[in-house]
Length: 483
Image 1 (cartoon, helix red, strand yellow):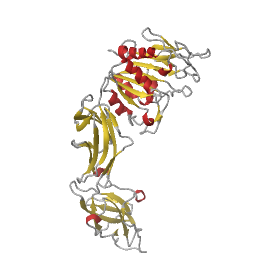
Image 2 (tube, rainbow, N blue to C red):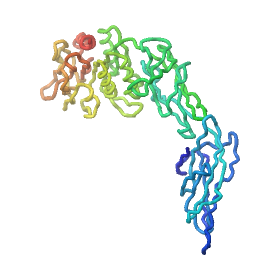
Image 3 (cartoon, helix red, strand yellow):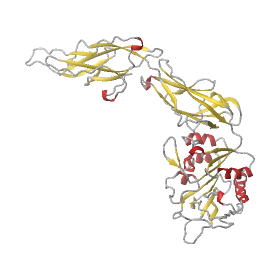
Image 4 (cartoon, helix red, strand yellow):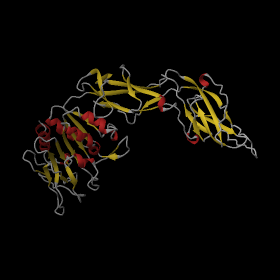
């Protein structure tokens, strides 16, 4: 296949000097039109071995006509099929036959005069070209690094100086496993161990999207150990790129049906202690370390595949946003995780989410939190509000849930209007009398066999009796979600 580009747009190409089109004609009239003449520069390319040109070449030509002017040109690679152009130069990308790393390209060009007469002896040049090996490298900014919590996602950039069509495929390998062929149009994949709760060597399921695994698994994974991941690309000539490597990737196995996501950088340990007090085991991922280092670049795939291996999810977050390594946009952890959380619940998962927001900057109406959690809208005019300092700062609206008290006047809560399918669990005892909006700060849905509980307050602030907070976690994780 031949690809044309403007001469002004190419870079790093072997450039054959471009000459101006020469025009000539004689005054007066002749009885018979004279045919035009064509030249290609240079008319001979004596290169061999490593001196051959790359497969992307810029060619130039010119024509002359004694009794008129040049109206255009035609070029051909076989002296049979011709392509018309009015340009005096073009950039060509030539394909090299599969299995070969060199080729000799025959190139003809002929001028056309103003009477549409063609040069009967087209200019010809043989173009010796050689294949350039393809290139591929992991995108380390987006790929899973250091530790994979059940799921690892890999991103890469593949290219070929001879043109993308010259690239055949990309291959990935885990440790000493087999090379896994990947369509060259793909630029990322995720893998999940066949048995996430196991250990040692095993196959891994391959995902190009969260919708479903590929039919063919990837072998070579070692769960509960350090892994090395390799990538290479191959072009149609069989030439391969240098191998790029991601080393020392630890694959952490699953140990519980409960996954806990830490998103409150100052009080993660408070929440994990509460959960430890009421459960026998849970898996924990801290998404606040190193300013969000462990957060996935693409939540919709990596995060969903991880939580989908569990039955229950507990996620807590403060009001601090994090910059996504893929989009460069800032968002709250509850926002980034919202769509995967929704898919998780639709597929049978149960979610206990805890988080408050910056009341001076209300959530945008487009925030995914409002469409996923049982929130219709956030209450307005809440900046500066605090809860009463008492043993009932949060007042239970259901008999199975304890009142929560505080020894201070908590500011870390965000009242909202619940969705129509939600049951109110807690109202805030708001300090002062001027506020007239919603006092709801806790809900569940649905009423029977709930699969989602949401509390919009920092539970570490309810220090009147932390055993009550433990009781809340016990009610949600062990009773509400026990179905």
